[in-house]
Length: 257
Ligand SMILES: Nc1ncnc2c1ncn2[C@@H]1O[C@H](COP(=O)(O)OP(=O)(O)O)[C@@H](O)[C@H]1O
Ligand SMILES: [Mg+2]
Image 1 (spheres, protein in one colour):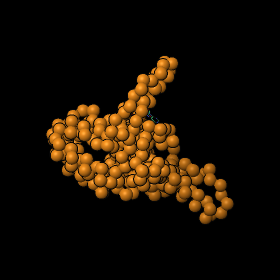
Image 2 (tube, rainbow, N blue to C red):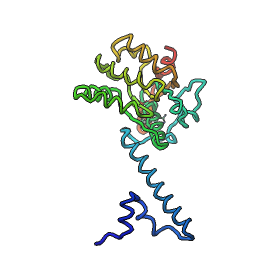
Image 3 (cartoon, protein in one colour):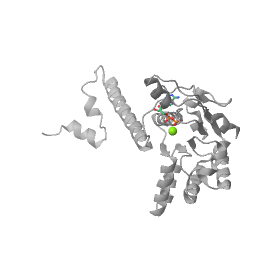
Image 4 (spheres, protein in one colour):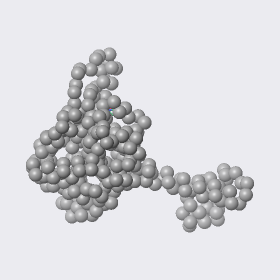
């Protein structure tokens, strides 16, 4: 079947959405019609860009701020929920550290903030800490570390999830530090961890490197303490009709350290 000249023109002009909508748009006058056709094209492009940003970020699941229950979170006095949700920290190149008990929504909040950032056109990456370090080490072995570091340094937000489950090798810890050091005052970093600061050296394996990492991260940071019972545990127990045990996370202690 022959392609219509209009479709060919749209293809040449890269107006992918126009052929899909031009017949459905009401015509009142020339300017209104053209305006609505172009508005539809722009809207479709914007939606495509957001989908690409979300896909490239590599989130493990889709989580939203609307679904997030703030009850386990203690915010510092200088931070408000709405400021966090409005992503003011990204504009200011500040960090968010989500510390505390397992299953209280640290990853959920990090993903939700990351997705909101993508919706606002920001570039984001999400890595579990160990995956990030392995990706960096692999890039190093293949001689493309500098390129990867450059790509990461152009992002608006770097999310490092689950710092603390597995100790890192020396080279890996140094690479992680380099990412954070390059981001300092240039980009935003979100780190989630179930460890108190005093325990981070068990992951980094070196006291000076740990101190330098924490120093860069906390200088302009919103430190959120997550406490209470695990959501997963609560759900599992409530569906089994049982009562959760009294569990207190290390969140507040992390701030005190
Ligand atoms: N405060 C919360 N509000 C809404 N959902 C939560 C909350 N805490 C945990 N969940 C849900 O429970 C599960 C585990 O949460 P997750 O964010 O992985 O916890 P963490 O990273 O602190 O271990 C996820 O499905 C998450 O959506
Ligand atoms: Mg988590």
